[in-house]
Image (cartoon, rainbow, N blue to C red; front, side):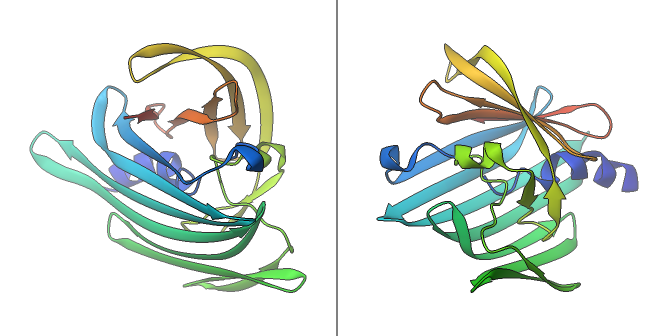
Amino acid sequence: MDWVRNKFRLGLLVVLSIAAVPQTALANRSWDFRVFLGDKEIGSHRFELLEQGNQRQLTSEAHMKVKLLFVTAYTYDHHDVEQWNGDCLSTLASSTDDNGKKHRVSAQRQGSATVVQTLQGSQRLGECLLTFAYWNPAMLQQTQLLNSQDGEYVGVKIKDAGADSIVVRGVNTPARRYELRSDKLSIDLWYSERQEWLALESKTERGQKLIYRLR
């Protein structure tokens, strides 16, 4: 079912890492999302952030399954552990099963460069990289982000789309919306007035919405 695989790749490719509250406000936190394709719940994605001084550890776990009638048409499992020094990525180790296609990515900051290794090879990138770190609003100021699923360094444009509101755990909540765009990506992000990450919507190649809602 190649069309099913392609249908979900765009929505899932980037939703895998996380963008930030100011460091002084951070504590040990978690974001536990229900994941929907349109109106249908297809899985979960949980992020856990531990902080000690300037050091941060982020763990990301995603599990998704799409069924058509009684047939499982698509499965997705992702595990990612990231170490951060302030707003700069120190190390990353991720493994992904994208409907049978395996990905493994490791990254390590080495002096003035960050070495990123995938199953296809390695590349040396800049000294201070950010992933699609939606928990860290420092991400919103970036023009390139590292995809923790496949190791691609993606050029992005991020726009402040202004004041908005969104339903969070059944409550209509004031928010600010940001538009993240690239050649292949169309992602909207919502943050609270304190810049806490609240929600995400990503458009798939077939025009469906992949939606993250906090439990």
